[in-house]
Image 1 (cartoon, rainbow, N blue to C red):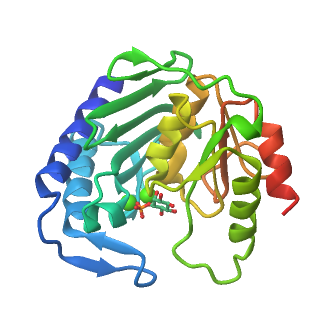
Image 2 (tube, rainbow, N blue to C red):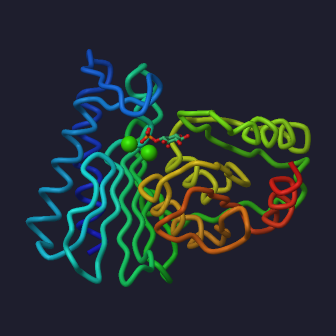
Length: 254
Ligand code: IPD
Ligand code: CA
Ligand code: CA
């Protein structure tokens, strides 16, 4: 099954790459910052048609089409283009993210970093690979030596804590970055480039593949209460595990 997930993630990436840099038909979702392009839709159609053909009974939850209302022990969670704002503005940082859950447990996670042409692929219990090479989280344990990454919500109303956390981590770590693709943020934690990634307002399609990718690389993933993620997730903290408690402390004291 992992080979099929990898195949369709790469195929969707190919469509996205072909459309990168071209003029886009942009539509707005919740507000003027929350975009969707025709390429998000093309990528999604390709992935959903593939799943429906290869695994007709499986449930699917996908960002632009929602839940397909099928009852199955298998659930595919799909973000057909993670990093739409980057894509629409010509910044080459975006990905395709596909997770597969069995009885609510994420068993496969695949993220394709389209422009770097790197495929991250994890199977629960079998490790994680970036273009076939085994990857691991970093070994840094002091926040002062760490490079962290975060993301911001499309709507800041009532979310002042987002800025306070950002300020605290800026002061306490070596550096904080904001790339604009939560799925890639997770992969770079798994690869040991970033030591931790936090974000307060996410959806399962942004990070469920990234969750198993981080865990299989030896890292830890929870919400801001240190509880395991569920399908209702919003908050996400993924780390090399060594700084998990320290990051939780900063998050919960701001
Ligand atoms: C977004 C990206 C971004 C994160 C946002 C997400 P989208 O996904 O992952 O990094 O900060 O919260 O919504 O809308 O480009 O698929
Ligand atoms: Ca996303
Ligand atoms: Ca998306």
